[in-house]
Length: 577
Image (tube, rainbow, N blue to C red; front, side, top):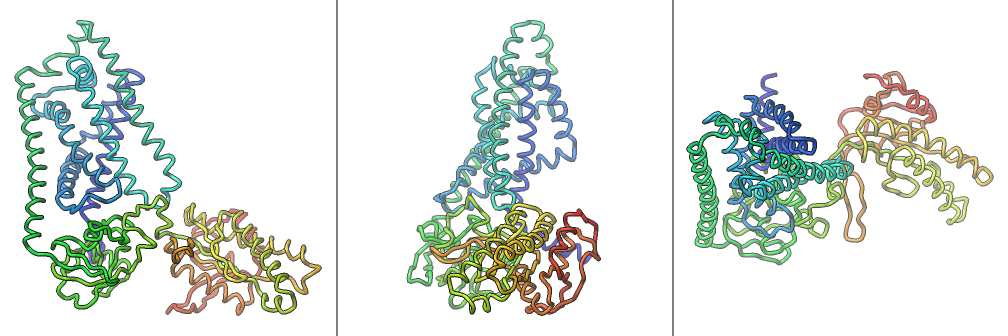
């Protein structure tokens, strides 16, 4: 048990990159920003409501364990942001990443005065500055409201960009995007309006001497000497941060100078194109710098493998793969040492290679608005249905008559699939592949697929009755259903690209469909689909079958009459298998 836990921990560490650490820290900080903005929004009710809200806000975020995590995340996120500025070799990507980086680097300088004035003032001198004191400072005592407004907008935009980059490749993003966009607009709008309304209220109340007496005691705002000390700390830290950014820019210049002095290397793309670039650039950075199309869905973050290249010639002199690169290559099942990630490989000598994913299909700058069409791994249920006896049908009829009947059959099947939440995907002759789960969870997808199987039988019965005058025997069919992790995306070449699914689960569904002929049944459902759908263990006959391409036999459920599935699913029989 301990060995297994250590192995999983080791795999987790190997699969974690600096970008992912920065993402986790950013999510923590964004949660704080959301909490703070919601607190600001209470100003639309009253300043007293803001005071009540800030009590719960500070109670949570100043709880010692939470506080340690929060400040640790803030320092780590800032440090990794500065390191990202040093590490980045060029800023010409056609994305909002450079904007996110610039906004993120500006936040510490803008927020320094607020954090030190409130948090450090509390720690050093016990100041209890809350909304009345801060709003008075912003709206009456000085004109810092515009600085704070800019800070709020920059922090929110920076966080939203990070959340977008994080979620855009997730399966649910397309459905969640309208709600996320609404929140991204509504929350800061309400927060800024709340600050404005609270500021107006404080400005009006500040004319009352009694209000000043109660809200500007030494315990709340401190003395002039304490304020001067805090100002000096703010100035020193701000200059120190600006100096740190200056050192990073200087280090970038020194690195570039050393690389130029260290010599140039030649990158040959295997198609006759050769670039001369300084040592130290990754292959993907070299491609982007010289506007050479290079596939990279994740933008060079080592979160995908679409930038993969195959080295031509000797690869023994190349740097060893980093932990993250080795993890990604292992994840896609690549053990060939000549295959590397272009975004991670930084050659120090001449290199020849060719790209495994051609840029005609995937642009180097592609950050798709529909990520699933580029490539995405997810759980889907594949349903293969095939018309039986179409060859004999064609022998007795004119070609156009045969096409008419096959099209009516595929139309009936497609209608059954669509009615039950599936998507007809591929038509091959008189057969069809349908996919379930593109917009639903695995259990729902499995139940939808089983309902579709029953509906196919019903629709084909209706078709047989409609064509009874022209058919020597009723149309029969075979169906295979299996669920599992597959890769979905656009597959093909140039104008012949289709959206489909690839993977073992799709192949198994096709094998099960073909097996209905030998088992003399209408459908075969995998045990995986039966179990995930929540049907009783004894709901359908069980059988072990050998699947071509698999070493171990597979447990399946044989459905002699697919119409019975309607009663099983419609009856809501969900039990733990």
